[in-house]
Length: 129
Image (cartoon, rainbow, N blue to C red; front, side, top):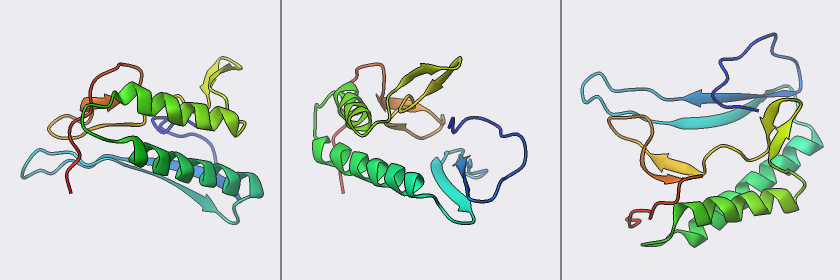
């Protein structure tokens, strides 16, 4: 599923729907960015497995995040996790499938800002709490 797809067709029962929401504040001009998957009806066992893999990927990324780490290294580690779980990335039937979307990116006055954790290696900024 491509979170940037505008959508088409009916929303079928028991099927996942990916929503990518990126509101922009009229007052400050800053963006937010949030992707969520919901199911109309009951989620299948396979979707529960996918959710568990995504959750494990988030935890892996958080464990790896530190000052100076390459965003590409984090993305690749999560992509490798997905492949080991049977969710390989690549072109199938003319469309990208699998974990092809970036792991993360900065958000501010532009919806996609540096740093990026995807196909272009750049150091991640220091994580602060």
